[in-house]
Length: 69
Image (tube, rainbow, N blue to C red; front, side, top):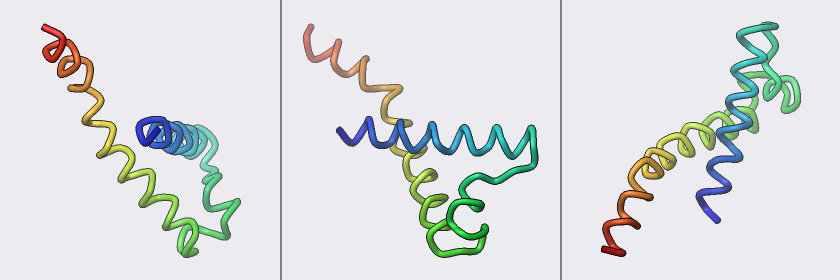
């Protein structure tokens, strides 16, 4: 469940970065009241933590395969 939440937050972050790069539009800041708004910063931090968490997904399948052997 935690992996899915992290992936969802990374998708939100990826879409936000895409919009920022293409249109110079920060969707998170627009929705939550600007880049300096507390809620926007919380979302940015959660996306960052999710990215760190998802590093473990690179090794998860390999660990599962080794456990089965």
